[in-house]
Length: 349
Length: 235
Image (cartoon, rainbow over all chains, first blue to last red; front, side):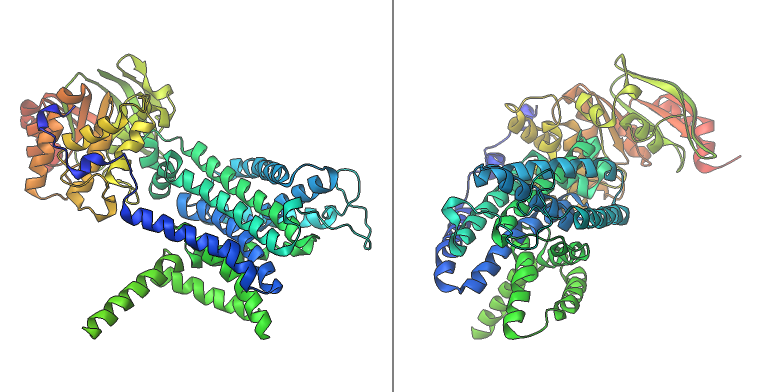
């Protein structure tokens, strides 16, 4: 093909080899340093209150990451992610009480079982898009809340539910042997989150990522390119459910005790709001979203300001993002800072 | 060879294709007709987006209509869209590679096949460039590259030159003319630009209100009284 066109070895001809260039290496180095600082600097510098908060940020960054995959990569709006998180937490808690399996195995199992649940829910929902899919997933979240209120979270009891109705002497949900204390568990949560981010990155940079990009822009174009759109949408649902299930497992160990009132349906809406604010097109957006969702309330709480103000703030934030920065704060803040820097340099010279 | 027999498509009370029977042999064939004649509907039937009420389509001996829509591209049905659908978020390379990786072709030849397709359409842009930064003409070429990469058997081009300036239309015409020889595929071109159709197509078929009103050598068809009537609306 094209032999008569006299192809030259131009930079373009290198495409597809994807050797990391210098900017990419600098980026990798920066991220590594940042992660090392988070892993080893944070436990030294932060109080226990904020270490616990940052553990929650690590947990919810996985949840917002998963939601970002659905909304940003494939264009599927889900309002049921808190329910999916609850399923992951429930399964992990049940397994942690019932077995002596190592924690990573339990996390994997929680992820896989949640993934199976996500696929079962996703399959009929895939015929829907936009508002209708959002409504169906919201109803699912509501249904799960009702089921959980009846079933309760395992508290060391026997049988399928693992709940014995006892209100006292409830054993805590165990943590991994290597991460019993809060700082160690924080590191553990961050490492699990890093693995989940790497899992998403491995998807978005390869065949599924390209297929999702095509589906999001135009399903006919994706079909015409030979993409099995149902399979790839279901794949996105499965991946998002797996990650959220793992996050549920990490959450179970972080809080030691789980209650169904901890997973209210309306939190799924707030979660979508912060995910949109953080930015659904970049992985950093998930981190920003988790900081908004968990760190900001903790900060306000510490300052004695009511966290109810956040509902108003998130409402305004979503409006702001939708009108001025569809790619979210993760895109807008660096861009505006760079613009400000250029302006300052220009005025200085 | 594509053999269409009694193809009928209805949208509610509207008959968009009315018992269309036609054979496309080889090379580049034109398909023209006024707006609403059923040209895009015909392409949508071939792509599997629309299920016909009646009729058969045999493509190189294979019953095309019984194949799932996403499998048709893998088998070799490729197309471009009236409103261009190059995927903005992906690079030029990834746009084309996306089709290749969902075909039956192996990974070994992918890079070379993709770069060959990009160079075949004469796209003057770094393959790593994101499509959203390209102009309209270049995006059209990305779509055509997607349609010719690997081993297409049937290339459907739905108004590929719509909205392009003359110079870019001329270049696109050169590319379209070379598709059958270069890929071995049969190409069908839908366009309102008669000079482009004349330049690219040896044979042309004309649809009007879902009915086939003429087909044959392009020059003869364009002189046909029924065709002139359909286009110009003269009595």
